[in-house]
Length: 125
Image (cartoon, rainbow, N blue to C red; front, side):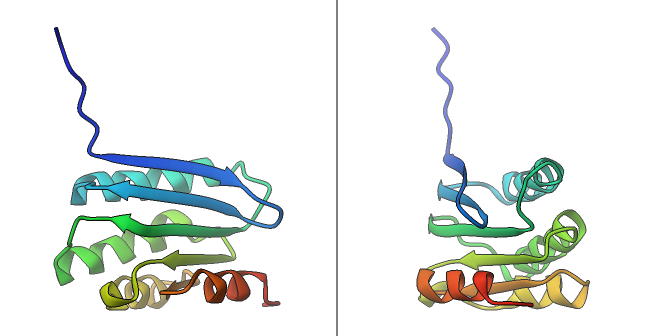
């Protein structure tokens, strides 16, 4: 008997004015890079140009170098989106991936509050 082990869950939902992606569990660094790339491909078909990525249930801890590379992948894969809000637990905010993405032309912001993330996504600009 073969057993399939999934170390993380991914849920994509389309809300009134944005798409929402929720990730939970223990994704590896490579899985996160692949997930961002695939979201970039899939989001080209979405009705929205705004994305909320909820990472509050991610347990994996990434090194600063990995966080930087994740930001670069976000810049490469999600540049066609107008705004990308990344929601994480406040104690895990480093802004490394945000700075890497923004320096490479993608409008990414990291938030510790869902209210703040949604307010930014819904604001003009």
